[in-house]
Image (cartoon, rainbow, N blue to C red; front, side, top):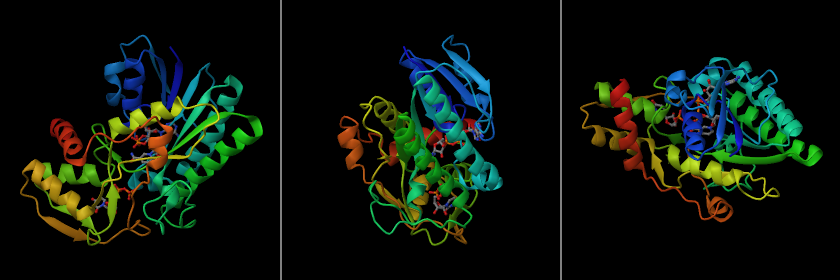
Amino acid sequence: MKKTLITGGAGFIGSHLCERLLNDGHEVICLDNYFTGSRNNIVHLLANPRFELVRHDVITPFMAEVDEIYNLACPASPVHYQFNAIKTIKTSVMGAINMLGLAKRTRATILQASTSEVYGDPHVHPQPESYWGNVNPIGVRSCYDEGKRCAETLFMDYHRQNHVKIKIIRIFNTYGPRMHPQDGRVVSNFIIQALKGNDITIYGDGSQTRSFQYVDDLVEAMLRMMATPESFTGPVNTGNPNEFTILQLAQTVIKLTGSTSKIVYLPLPSDDPKQRQPDVRLAKEALGGWEPKVQLEEGLKETINYFKKIV
Ligand code: NAD
Ligand code: UDP
């Protein structure tokens, strides 16, 4: 049994990770400031004596005795991370410093939930970990992209300078139950619009692509990454390499919901990446043959069932 700390544990991905670690018999401290997360996401875990919930903001230091830290605290959707851009940078950078300090003192292994956004609007396709990216440092997405890039730098420097045991994973678009209904991400937006019979809002002409990973596949990759040998730090991409245009996604959601919604086209937000597909060869090799198991239609059905209950 390990003592684990999950920052951002009451969020979409964090809540699934809390659940999985408890099911595997570990102790979990779930730390969250509830900016985008919610106690509803983890209310079913509260009765478990191995589960502890703490309201805390990662921009201030946190003390606890732990073996493993999963650092997920950070708003993840463009709508939420642009709401208070300066706070987003503070969360990524000061949150990383505080959690790395904790890992240094407790000798815990710490995993950083980094992102495919470190590749920006990529000129290399699909994106391998060796690609340094094409990121605008002064655009509206920069608070998130550069914050996450700086966090990766901090992780590597704490490792090189202080021998902190670190793991970095770069998460590609992930979806599933407990996504925030108002976070404006494409999967939740389209499903909610389809269920309500509202127009499906495609930004741009819908030819931009994304590769969608179901949350259970990500959680499996995170646990496998944490269990890799100490010398292995990553970064490792985790995502589903099946790539879809946003128009294809809209059509699939309409089909699966049986919706009568119409597709409408709205302006493309600035710096919106044109394509994104993970190169997952390293993940397969380093994470014991890991590969995504849940394909888009199956994952969308689970997510649609979830949103049917809350919409
Ligand atoms: P989410 O918004 O549901 O979860 C983030 C959680 O962090 C929320 O519970 C929020 O309240 C909490 N949080 C935010 N700022 C905080 C702070 N200052 N102190 C403490 N808690 C704070 O988003 P998610 O999709 O679950 O993302 C989790 C992590 O995974 C994030 O770090 C995100 O950058 C990363 N990620 C997600 C995706 C994706 O597609 N979902 C892709 C790449 C990376
Ligand atoms: N998108 C869209 N309609 C929406 C929400 C998003 O067409 O209602 C597009 C968005 O412009 C982007 C893609 O879907 O090209 C993925 O957007 P999301 O915010 O989910 O994630 P990210 O851009 O961070 O990959």
